[in-house]
Image (tube, rainbow, N blue to C red; front, side, top):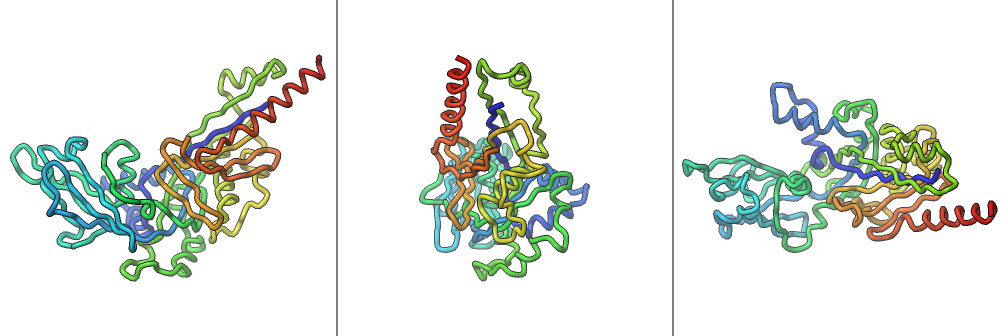
Length: 345
């Protein structure tokens, strides 16, 4: 049976620093906001830990007004500008923006800011605050709209240090004393002396969304047709998550993964023994994962994202955005079909 399993990886929560993750995972039930964040993190079945300089907001109050708030973002020596129009963010701008405050208040630069808007009484009230990662996450999920000026790729590029799975265990309970995270906190060097190492280490929690593409011919068995028509394939979400971990580790060779899965796609608990013939993974988020051999580019429109591909013949490859990952299999399977037609003549 010729099946291509396409899997998109979606964030369950905005990328979060290890410092903030440690705060969220201890959230008491009575703290409703933190508890919601904890629940979002625990929806993940796969995670990546990366490293990046901390983006900081610089509010540009002198050129902001009721119709548009303006922020500069600095990431090391790089910088870019964000425009937040009131018109396209009416849920938060209310009767017009009133200003921006840093957290803590009064700073020239900050990792987190709060937006203020005028309510019906003319009072300046705040109803949203965010880090840069949270802002991009909100935009990717159509909760917020912004415009950017200049290159912002430095803020969404992460050096990949570790890939792990959390199948059968909540992410907020995942990290124990022996985990590779402890090695990172000890061994990794701080990029900027202005920040703690735990602020530069970023956790990205993912869940999966998969669909199967099947090639059926006149030679396909009745069982193949039934599986294709009903969608009842021998593939589980746990298998996909475990296979995705192996594919990402095999493709990027992260520094702190001791097990490298060099034989991928061969595995006992992944997809090798499933109904899927080919396994494709894409990051459906505005994220760039940097590793020694290159980058894996994510995009909500996964046609413009990189793909990691493996198949039951042992073939693996990282496809760049726009590269046709299915052509190889379409040609192969069509050739097999033609050969069968000639043989049965």
